[in-house]
Length: 181
Image 1 (cartoon, rainbow, N blue to C red):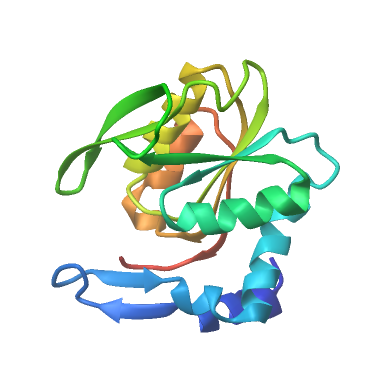
Image 2 (cartoon, rainbow, N blue to C red):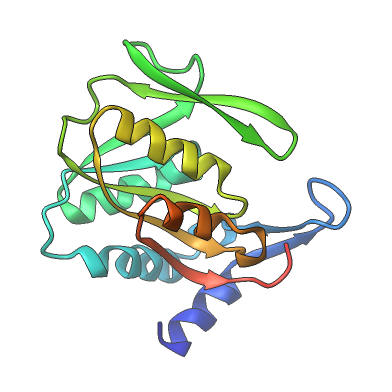
């Protein structure tokens, strides 16, 4: 990635110390989303490597993955698949439980959202420990998706999430990395 793009994105992401608990440096992308130039450059950069590839669906993880995923799906002329917390979807779903830093949670998606063999890009704002993204990959594969890549704006490499996804054979694309979390 070029230095100009990295500087634009780093300058557009707000860091909030000690949130949600002491010692955590929260990387807030809402400031990036509110900056039209940075938001556009982010979407363009996430789409670029897959331009010309036949991507059927973009799956976004609730909630910021919906914002990014919708924009990416539009740019790629692909469908959008929401991956949500348990109990939020009205039709027949598939579900997976996963570990969080503070306990367990479940996510789900509509059972018919992706057809077997469809090419899917998974999107969220940030990859940290990778638990949520790993669960989303397993959920998508459970219904037959071919995961082309998992894309994130921010990588927190010290927390190992990227390595978890790569161990599952998923290509991971991130735009900026932050040391410390």
